[in-house]
Amino acid sequence: MRSHRIAAATLLAVGALLTGGLTTASAQAAETDAAAAPARAVAASAQQKAAAFWTADRMRSATPLDLNLTPGAAKTLKQVERAGRTTTVAPTAVAPTAFPQAGGAWTGGGAVVKTSGRVFFTFQGRTASCSGNAVTSQNASTVITAGHCVKYQGAWHTNWVFVPAYSNGSAPYGQWTASKTLTTPQWEASEDINYDVGAAVVAPLGGQKLTAVTGAQGIQFNGGYNKAMYAFGFPAASPYDGSKLVYCSGNSSKDFLFSQDHSLGCNMTGGSSGGPWFTGFSESAGTGLQVSVNSFGYTFLPNRMFGPYFGNDAKALYDRAQAS
Image (cartoon, rainbow, N blue to C red):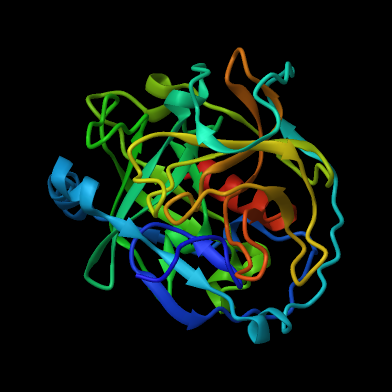
């Protein structure tokens, strides 16, 4: 596989390295009806198959799914007007001692250890993985991840499971199979990198719903740019191996190149895609407000991560997911 470092826009999912350029279409910032968020329902039989499919060995061998945006493709990105009312769904406070951090194992404990997890799926016949995070939701079963971690190249991923607190092949809080996966209309239509956001609704496990077991992080939409930020994920490409939760922290900015994404100094690699970005993060409690996900990097700008802005369309996606 090629280098999975953040690159001419390397989307950081885990699975196969995708060699095609990532194209985008013009984006609209207008309010989107929640029902418009594209979704794929997963039959009960397929959920059972997915649960049986992911053995410890398969999870360990799943490879990073990277999406590459060439410099030429990057230039086709359109400017996106960001407008909308700020919406916040609960926690928190800050006490930065692990700040800034360009990439290291999270040893601080707290809620983020249980709400963050690895995402496993099958893409084009290959075992693959990403990262994800459990958020506060009406159905207590919603996971937020990247769009390319649920659907890519016109096909929805199969055998999709979320493993909170994954640790070197073990699933201490179980493997949660998706009953539905969703993404934004812009990602569905043209894989517009500005809207690389996905979600999954997971089925109950052992008679319990996900966030009753893992807890849930807050989430915020239209919160603006230039924040102190903490990003988490399970990078699986060298020098990481996907075995543990890794984080970056620092003052974020707005991408000054080709997208309208958040930008953060971070050396996480393939497999971290879909991992949460938090503002207002409390290191002692391990809680914060999720405002983005690990999405991509530019090949010519190493050690910098980019994540989509959670605006109206991300909120519509979240609303449809939590109501499912």
